[in-house]
Length: 315
Image (cartoon, rainbow, N blue to C red; front, side, top):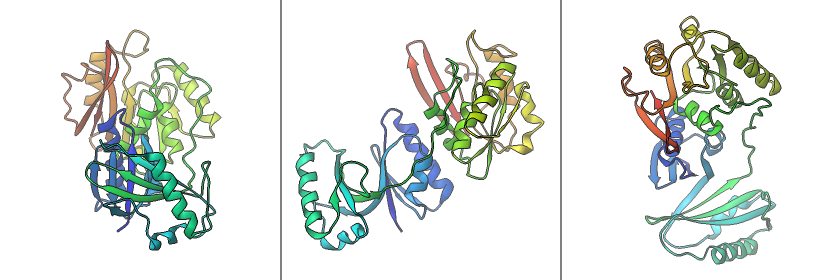
């Protein structure tokens, strides 16, 4: 079975690793996963490009050819370069050892040009050849050029809106598949809706504030999306529960938020009304989740500054 690799950002390491694992298991429950720090190695029938297009915190990804005990690139591996007009060699050191990256990349590039007609290109090559070093073992792999997901644009923003990376990661952690629909009962300016639609996932928005609903609709239209947005209280989700498969939302907090209830009461009431069959990933201010009747399968803390830490709850 093919092996893929993903090197993720260490910014939110646990969340980034879990996002990849969730996507892989969603597409192929029989996949095998090995995590070495921020390197994730997957044995799966799912193409690495499919996972990379959805994942948020992936810095580098591709397909592994083989493990290696020393730096080498033998003749039978040159076949992968057939058809490639340009290539680049990239050594990545995830170990504690000192490694001369520049020398390794130069030497490998010279070897490759000796055996094939591909030319070295440092800008947008047809193929990138990787040598990945870890404290446990070293790996050899490659990636071909592929088109990443188009980032939606937001002509109208709001200073308290959810960060797009965390929005996207929450959609993935909620295990929402390509043919499913997500609902955001506090959609605000439409961050969740925009990210979901750009990933090929249908979306529905609800918001208590009519002005926010209009901004969401405007942002959706600007990107060519036609998701429904309802100017209703969050409990309207119970009336349309058959129209969505999961909930992804950032619960309002603070005096700047226009909501129908105080934050602590709101989160308690909201959680009690989540449809039982719905998958979800919800974010709230740390402390507000303390007394709610909810047993998440995963919980992540997102530090913002000394007076604010957010919590993501996933089930």
